[in-house]
Image (cartoon, rainbow, N blue to C red; front, side):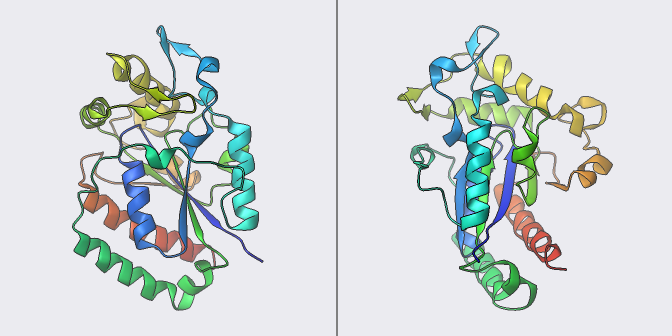
Length: 252
């Protein structure tokens, strides 16, 4: 019977999640992407923070719809037929990874998937579904969503880099049309929300500081090293090896 493994990839907005998700889709066979951003509520129902429409909090996401989609993916090993994604139309930063590196990793993963544990956990009947989302492991995410994520990867965020990336973007395709961040949006909405939701994962609540390794282990959370300073190529290399190990653990 078909059954997908769901890989949750989360971190601050503009931490490189979507870029990494697409790279992993290129490396791992039998892989597709599900975007949390496809589950935003209608714009006129979103809450406000500091006088600005808040796209970066749990209350802006249809968590029940996301949970239902994850359940469908688990049971049917494919995207729900009712889900129409807008996210593939949104711009992302250039990958910044040499195609030869991607080709090498892809060849290594295909070899791994053709034998042993890799063959048991990845194939046409048991694909890998990557859930790309800015808020998957935060304190306000409902338990039904988190419990349906099998492998959990978290990208540390460097404030300066995340802010520069977010402010460089032209805007976002939405259900109603198009959204452009107003001035000061990162400092007034994005970063405060990220800190509020994820501070519990870090020593002293400092999201640019040291991860609480004991807690991360208890939560089954694989946190990328480098404190947000690694290149996307380094992050990709780490993610590929981590995903392989985590998938192997599922059949031991």
